[in-house]
Length: 103
Length: 177
Image 1 (cartoon, each protein chain N blue to C red):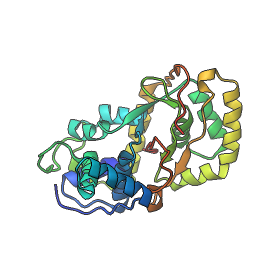
Image 2 (image 1 turned 45 degrees about the vertical axis):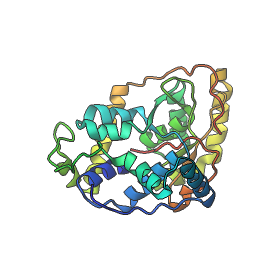
Image 3 (image 1 turned 180 degrees about the vertical axis):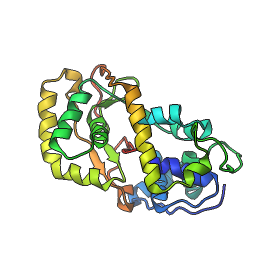
Image 4 (image 1 turned 45 degrees about the horizontal axis):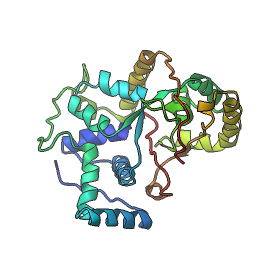
């Protein structure tokens, strides 16, 4: 993966808590944060970069998608969403018992 | 959600991330650091598993989220949201998931926060929040006990300041496509 930098601004109290947790686990906070971010974008450990020619959908490669304009992507996601909505077919599920308060 | 998806594509072909993609990744990392649960809707899950034909990309997202399903009365609440606001159906549904979405075990109702980069959704929500609260309270009164805890979520258009906030929040769902 190409080296890049992402600046993460974190509330001081959360930062302190995070640093304490890292210390307790013997981890460096900066590395732990990097790993947290990588966990959301890394495909597989040690995987090489994509060429772009990999299939993304039945009709599009990764490169095809990335070459689309913002408007074209927006239209595509709308179309995908409509398809997904139709497939869901208005299903609804009964909630079991009382959900515990989360707030 | 879409910015996250595109961040995965960009980063894995070696392209630079956009500001919005970086922001989304920073939010996700912050959520994870706070042990918050991250949700996508069943519609988004369906796109990722049935339209996207690249399992590693799909897996990179699905491994990090839980799925929200519509509970009973969800459609009724969507219709009311559509009557009250000028939101498109899709955005009304996102908002409705925040109150009447449930997890796979059907033991949870709604989420704490909806994060969206759609300023229209955020501003319309803020404009009609009071009425939406009243309408949801009225709807919930007539519902079974399991639904009495249904509340409006916070709807947030994130900026760096949204990386802060109360540590009591436990869920950080991604709204929008």
